[in-house]
Image 1 (cartoon, one colour):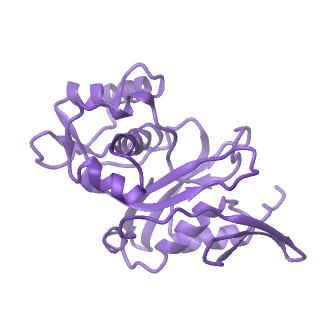
Image 2 (tube, one colour):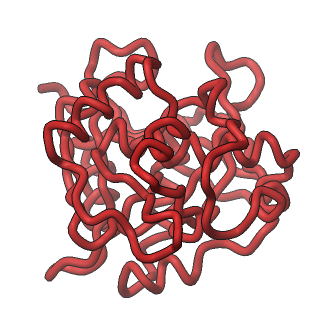
Image 3 (cartoon, one colour):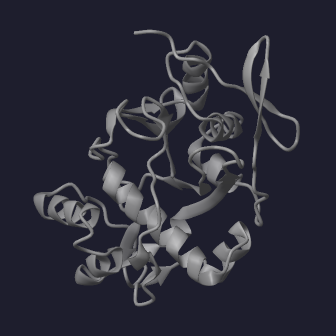
Length: 254
């Protein structure tokens, strides 16, 4: 999830730096996110916004998987950043504050798989706000890599009254930064990132503010991006289908 907000320095995006001991992408900066839970497809979940059929068109999948993807994006954003894209079931706004002790207990229960997103929302009379999300990108890890992922990226504004919080337990840093600053740090070797993060940050840089970025999210359907990798005297590169080259910067020694 590309969480966005406006600040005095311009549009900012929320990045987590994964702890170095993690089996995948340890030490890398990335967006909040994770995998689909088997209960993310619950059909009794209240839903406001574009129906699963629209998301299926955006991501080139069936409607059940589309429902699971949107629910997983909302759930993981709450689990990893403490931001919940939900509101009253009558469509009257967005829940303004999810930082109290009762919310924290439910966030922990979600992470422990003791509670589903549908159960959490139903218990509070809330609906998932699919209208607050936009489809942004679709990346597939190329064959030959030890770990492969089929990853869908979403964009969303942080709702008024809510604050992203460092609550994931899987990160040793959580920051708001402009896309340009993050890319400069990556180029300097101080913020290592994987190609999808680098490329999507580059896609954000032309937008003057968060509203423009949401309005300019790529139209559906998204073309999946599966890079290849190339070695040369000037380093290692990820090469995208359109020929774009993303340099794989080796982080500086601490």
